[in-house]
Length: 55
Image (cartoon, rainbow, N blue to C red; front, side, top):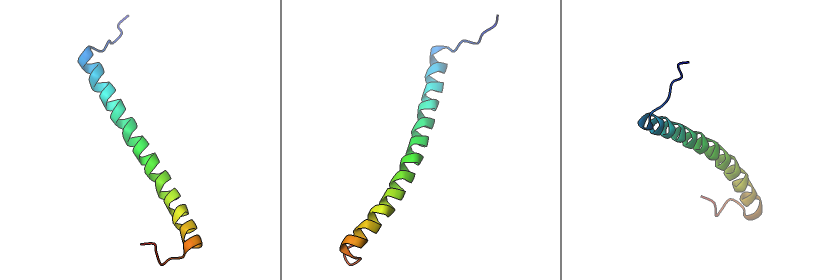
């Protein structure tokens, strides 16, 4: 059996890459959520208070 074992530096490297990839994916998902909820909030504020005070 020839299994490939990662040494400590390779493990740190690939773990860091995985964590960075997860952070990018989470950032994109949260950006989309905030974008859509912001549009909904802006619409609700325009309905309640009008468009004079919204920049």
